[in-house]
Length: 294
Image 1 (tube, rainbow, N blue to C red):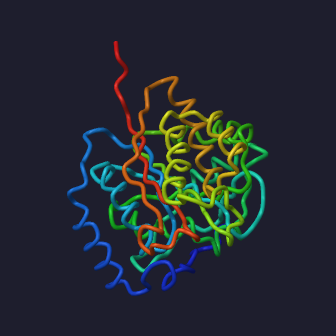
Image 2: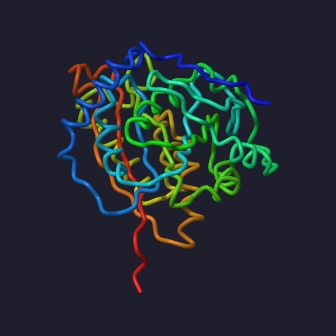
């Protein structure tokens, strides 16, 4: 049974509550980034940050511009839980997700089919969606770029390499040309308030080195290497579980077609505030079809 509408909770906090002001902001920001190099490749997935728009919208928009010409009937979003701890992934019984820009219909058939795979790591947990910003902040951006799509919203909890592979088996059928995958993740959260201080000098340079090491493993589609990186560094990549699921799906997809990836943009909140003692990193990455050599 559907719970109806999942109403916006973070409008006026992470992005503008006014429809007119939000549309104006997105239109203006997109226009500033139209010189972003376009691609002729068909984008299948993106990794986007989920901070307040003042910090992360530039990265997200530069990345989404690469997919803007795509024709997607569905958008599958995997976003991490910041509020409720659980293992695996959580589906919701909402049939609509609302933002100041309007309502997005949920593909309830796909949601039910995913739940019906009998996967122990998949369950309905609408509470995990209700007050979670990491999925919500993506929605106005997606509404601005794409029209008439159905949403497949997923919140992930604790994920490891084994559970990522298990979940991927239940999601692989949605790795299709008409489905855009959106992985919601910020990168390193550095500072005392995040309880993560792996270095104290040359913070900007060391952050970049730390983040780009993770980015390279993601671009290489190296699930095992990425998991080892997380264990070794303790890196505070909040969407690491969602990224692991994507990499596991890509392992399965690469058996049929070759997928390539590219870092579109990288920045940090410190670049905006000049405060690197408390700093969050943002990376925009695209995954696209690449013809196999014959």
